[in-house]
Image (tube, rainbow, N blue to C red; front, side, top):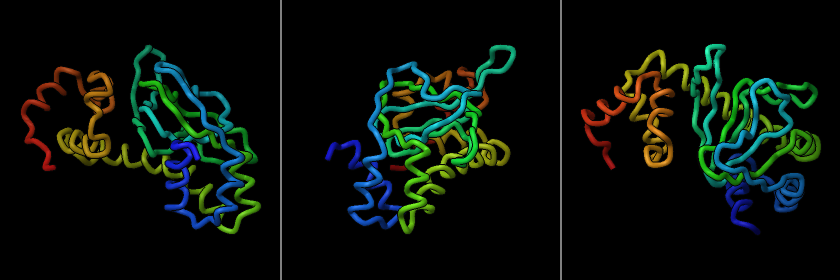
Length: 199
């Protein structure tokens, strides 16, 4: 089995106790896809038809306001789900709330909403997987909002470093500054002043 699906299946079986036959049936509904650096996986306002699981690369979720200003709300890297934040509902045409852009060449497992519906209808614990894949990313967005309103900039910087240990080598500093809501100069000064994280 390809390594990308091995990662995907480890993620699935961590949350749902599928049989081997159920896992294979679900895998057959999904597909490995590649996107290039700078390519949009989803565009804000467009109808979503898939969820994704990221096996290689890093992406950002962002919006652009009417002044052309870009606000980054989240990053996603290996072993994380990817969505445009509209909660999954197979019966509705849900539009993405944010843009989802590759910051590196990326490999993902594409999970069509039809595949999730198949799992829900045909597998004993299928509703658990569908709910987890769709909601995990939304919970992360809530985490972002809560951190923004309750944590200091240093605490938020340490949090992103723990979630993405090598993010400063993979993502331009101005994007990290945008996520934190500060200027790149402020970010540079914070990195110089803060205490090193414990390993």
